[in-house]
Image (cartoon, rainbow, N blue to C red; front, side, top):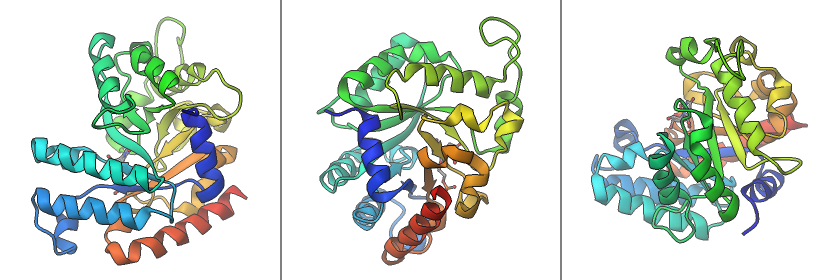
Length: 280
Ligand SMILES: O=C(O)c1cc(=O)[nH]c(=O)n1[C@@H]1O[C@H](COP(=O)(O)O)[C@@H](O)[C@H]1O
């Protein structure tokens, strides 16, 4: 299996960096005329995958909306991932898992093992127990051609005080929590050019306030939520991410999904051309 970085680069080349989030909120199920139960979520997810295929290269299912329905929700995730894979879409499982290494290893195995029921191409992870605790999933990702996106500067205001806090000891003495995560994740990328290990940097944050420079994000895949419903505009992508806009995944959920499944392809194509302008 080629590395996640190689597959992501090919996706950027063919489709650009727009990613469609699959977040079946109850209000969206209602707007789509679907029931707020696992049948509605299944229909929503499969229609969304269909609408994404051929229009963008990536989807990011937010697993919380599926977990609401227990094992039946997981079955829908499995079916959706399989459909996405067969349509050539990269799947970033938005699971935000984190724990000490002996436990987080199992999360990695669930989401990144080739052939596992919930196999995705990449997963999101939380590193408040230390980026080094993620070594098990990182090793698995290396051998299986998978990727991991670690939360660094998230789009929600409530995280600002924690993520901009300064570390007072050790290797990262004096740097912000966000910058230390970016530094440690960058160090995982041994290959030259784009790496397989990325960071989440929300489009609603000013990276400088988080102790980050635009250069810190070069060659690291950047997962960038916050566009659309949370207020950032794709026309600001270069201003926000500088040269790293070329390796930024602009992920959008509610703003596109609320248009209804028949409108999704044209919405995605329009975002693609806006982002292409920014990358140029
Ligand atoms: O990791 C994420 O995807 C994520 C990180 C972050 O900092 N902010 C953030 O909004 N997200 C997720 O990105 C999606 C944003 O959805 P919309 O605001 O509807 O586009 C949701 O699934 C969030 O859980």
